[in-house]
Image (cartoon, rainbow over the protein chains, first blue to last red):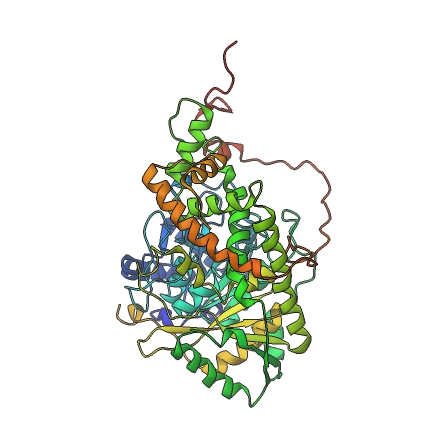
Length: 490
Length: 97
């Protein structure tokens, strides 16, 4: 048996190696845990590891393969963000209030992955209840960026992005409410996709802001990401917001459209202002190359500047309602108290971290009598304007290109004491959630400090395949493997 | 837009949280800053604009109301802070007559 070089692997390549018996799933999973033991003490991407069971599952996968069973992920190790339920494993949401919670059932996406033979290696770190942009709001510990351990991996799915970048598992699932897949993907140099709202069932995802939350995949390349999306997509009777539409064959689509030229819009609002010069330069260079094949035109999304304020009213309002369930009664942390009200208050005061409390307070305020019209209703109307911006733009162009973040990954501690500054770091990803359209983050270059830079591609509702198709083309153009130093030096 | 300490405590009660005074003071500052930023929205005329509560407008039909068995009741109960037989124990909510 050849030794396994994790940096050479993608999911599709690995499936071929497994099929040809060049490697076994047990060897692959064992190598993955060796990598975790080497790298994760520095990166800290995982909250829980599932080693024993994963190796057991790998043995089963190898046996099934011998019997001729095929699975689109048979024997492939992947990680899952710790706000998605896997039966029998902890689901903590990186919160003290769920520290001892063991999921009693599988999320629909987990059921689908299991049916294809995926192996779950562990649960990844996040900002508590997915609220944050740096993974510093985890109640347990922050995750470090594999490209520079003093920097944040982004958030809230920072653990998933850092794990995939560090080759600890071949893919991951995260959730994206305001950029929580795309921003960490950009910061860690991996591909991260937020599907159209309604494309993927959220049954078994711990709710944060229900009109915005969406589960999506991380991969080391576009094809892997498309494959994961293919498997988790589709209508689910257990999530009434999942769309009852046919799911196209994403892999076939991106391969059939390798040469298709698209009409691409560059929204001027995303390119003026204070975006980091190196980011702008890398994107401009790329756009110049794309001009040879595609039609590029400037467009306008005039309400972009209102998106952050809109989001930070709507998301906390929904969160304040969703998180009311953590009351210390049926599950989760319960504080000793004399009466019921005191039990609620003490359990929640101890169990929730600072940012979660801040958002519950903000949301409660925005929904409270006398303020509802001025805040929540106002924001919901501005949301209509932001959505209309996208609908109008997609009458002129097929797809939209933007930066993912206004800056490269920032230092741990740099923004944590200023919530508003932290909120503003999501300025380019938030409008996509408000409109419910699909968006991908694709690594396209490195800064002079050797930090990855992401490109965001946004598409119309339920045209997820168009987004993947252009990403697939650009990935070929960029033609770079993004391997962080922590992996190279290990 | 300033939000007073008193208001912070009132909201905290509404959402069943509690804060030490220092913490509440800090919150009143932070929340005031954030609310100031929200003022941006007031500059937009939205008189004629309908609100959006769902990102994607879909007709999502109700599914048939069929009973399905859930076999892992013990796994749910295991997560309860305090159990007596198959019931979850909570502090007393009614006063003795």
